[in-house]
Structure formats: C-alpha cells, structure tokens
Length: 573
Image (tube, rainbow, N blue to C red; front, side):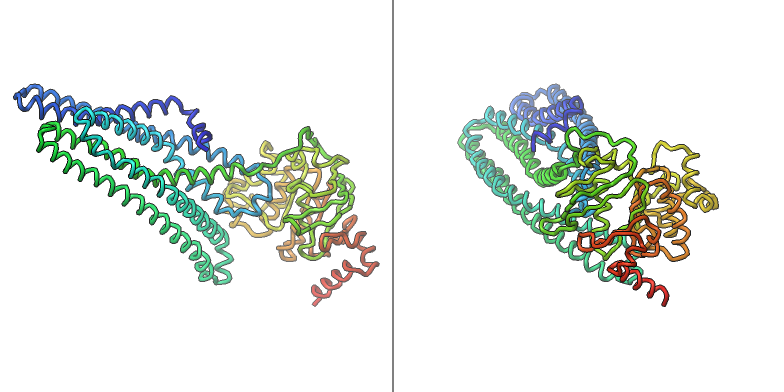
C-alpha cells in the first residue's frame, strides 16, 4: 500500500523536493533559539557584550522572518501538491468506475461510492501534504534537539529520555485501535451519504406519499450509527492523546527535578540549564505534533484503503483477441443460454431463440421472468454463465464490448436525462453529430416543434433527470438520442408503459419510425403494443414457455391468450 501511495508523488517530484527542503530549513531554524539562548546566558550577558546581544537578536529575527516565508510556501504549495494528487486519484477512480460492470452497481449504492470519491480522497490529500512534511520536520527536530541536549549534558539527557520507550509502547498499542475505529467511522459516513442521496433523489415520491417521517427514521438509523462510530473513534483518540500527553508532561517533571538536582550539585550551570529546558521543549513540540498528526494519519490511511478497494474491483475486460464488431446487421441468437445474478438463483434457464435481422421480436410474460435480463445480455452488460450468444453469427465474447454497444440503442421506461441542455442530451447519442443531424433526430422523434416553442430552444436546460419535462417529452427526447445514434439493434424495454394512452399513441408513432430497418426487441406488459410483432416469446421463470405470432399464440389458448384476454377485459371495463 505504501508503495502505491508513494507512486502518486512522482509527477510532483520537483514540488515535493522543494516542500521537503523548506520543511528541513524550518526544522533547522527551530533549533537556533536554544543555541542563541545558551550563548547569551553563558557568554554575552555575563561579559556585557551588548553588540553581540543585539546582533544575534537581529539574526534570530531574520531567521524567523525567513521561516515565515518558508511556512507560507509549505502551507500553500504543499497543500496544492496534495490537491493535485487528490485530483489524480479522483480521475483514476472515476475512469475505473466507468469500466466496472453492471454487477458492481447492482451491489453498491451511489451515495457510498460518492463518499469514497469526496470525503475519503479529501483526507488522503491532507495526508499526502502533511505526512512527509511532519515526518521530516519532527524527525529532524527530534534528532537535532536530542544531539544538542547531549552536548549540553549527556548524563541528564539519558536520565530524562528513559520515558521514550513508554511513549512508543503507548503509540503502538493505541494506534491499531484508532485505525479500526476510524475505518468504521468512514463506513458510517458512506451509509449516511447513501441514505441522503436516496432520499433527495426520490424527494418527489416522499412528498407524494407524505412519508417524510419514514425517510427521517431511515436517515436517523445511519445518523446514529455515525454517532456511535465517531464515539468509538474519539474514545480511542482520547485514550491515545491523554496517554501520550501524560508521558510528555512526565518529561517536564523529570527535567524540573533532575535538572534542579544537577544544578544544586554544580553539575550544570544556570545558562546550560535554561538552554536545556528550552531544548527539551524543542524536542517535545515535534513529538506532540507527531502525536496530534495520528488522527489525520488514520483518516488518510483508511481513506486510501477504501480508495484501493474500489480500484481493486475488476473492470469489464474483453477476451484476448476480441475483435471490433463493425456495423452489425442485427441477427441475434441465444444458444442454450443460462444466467444467474447470484449463486444458486438462476434467472435464465437454457434459453434458445433466434431473431433475424430487421425482425421485431417481442418478449412478454410475468414480472421477474427474465425479459429484462435477456435485454441486458445483448449489449454484454453481464457475462452469460453458460451457452452462447451470437451477433451476426459471432460469439459476443469474441467481440469488444464497446463495438457491440455502438450497434445497440436502448429506450427504457425509466429515462435518464442529464442536467444539461436539450441539445446536449440529444448529442449524447453521438457526440460528433452536427446541428442539422440533431434537429433531424428531434424531428423524427416528434419533439422538434415543442423544443422550438421554448424561449431558449435547444439551449433549454431540463433540470436533474429532466424534471422540467413531462413523461412523454422525456421519452421523445430519449428516442431522438437513439435516432442520432442510428443503431442496428433496438431494445425497447417497457418504453411506453409509464405513459397515458394518448401520449402512448404519440410516442408509438415515433417508435414505429425508429424501428424501421432495425432488429427490434420489445419488452412490454401491454400486449396490445406487440400484436404486430413478427414474433412473440412468452418468458416465465427464466424459460420460453410459448412462441409464435399474435394469432398463433391466441390460437394455442395458453398463457399469452390468458394474459391478453385479461388485459382486454380490464381495458374494456
């Protein structure tokens, strides 16, 4: 882990060296005060050398002025180095998240992922800056002050430093407890963020059902878990700080008693004793700084561990030698395909079907039967467990995922639109499209006239998830996006099920236009929308239980006919 962390310093080697050099000089300047103090008390003041008193006083002042500029550089440029490292980690994490499979997002909440990208990386940034800086300043200050104390009086120094092993023992014992407590605290913060993201994203549902109290109750669970986690963290931190602080106080007591006895016996003079007292504080100050740094260290280390957990997640990978699919014609064939999301919970069971290019193929049946899973396998969102899935006769595993997905357009019931302009949302279908192509796509989706009625036209921002648009408008905008993509294969997954009948008729015209010349897979609960499909398959419990045209399936008087008659009866009532 340390090796990986150090690797992020490499792009900033020059700035890092300058920061460490500045820290080194700050540490050296810090030791000058006791040196000058000793000289003044032992030589300049007794010998009444006033010119040297003034000179060395001004000299120390100049050193402190220099230290002020060095500390400004350390605080400013050192923090900027940490920020740049944080930005690099965030960039890598985001790029890695883009490569992770659907399965990862099925198992991880958005809020928890966001917590790792924001809170955790912020603490890593602070550690990246303060870690080496504190380590260098404190190490140098401790070593120099210790050597200087030996020069003043070796016996008194050794006598005093018998406390050091006790301090190290306390640090080693309590540091592990702090680390565990801060890791739990990180996890609780992620839980709060996940709850908050869920509640804010669904605030309209909460208000519609007047369930604010329920959301508050759910949020409070995570909030109280956070309080308990922080309690344990601060308890461990309190034990750490109070114990180490007590040991540093013992140093002062020993200096007071031991130094007093040495002074009484004439083994040390008053000037050396005064310098010794100042130098001991010069030793204790960086030790205290290092102790106080432990909280930041624990935050940064646990944050980096959580960062590495994300980075260790396995990306989607094409098989070795996978080739570009190019422009597919659109023939799809499932050969004995089985799939399960979780071990032992099979969703698809030995599916066999072939969809010819340009054919409209409908999937119907009870919820949870496996229809959407079939649609997710075609763009290779998931890897099949057994069997083969062929596109134009080629095994999908031998084709690159990106080239396959370029050939597939998806229109779903739950449309996701970005908080951007209408133009940008349509352009998402093909980023290099011209303005004329965007407008043509909007016209074919029957939304151009509406767009032109808006004050800002195609520059109109539509809000988060398109909240400023109606359901039908959002659906037509998503259809325009697919028109622009111009895929060979089209998947319509409950594309009109959330719309009213009037809007559905309008959208269906756009979809009919979109389906022309493409292989189309339609998933629908409203069976009236799939009557004209070239072929219909009824999926139940992961199996194809019926297959044929509308007329053929009605003639069999099986599950499809039963579902159709039931819907027709309900719609007629």
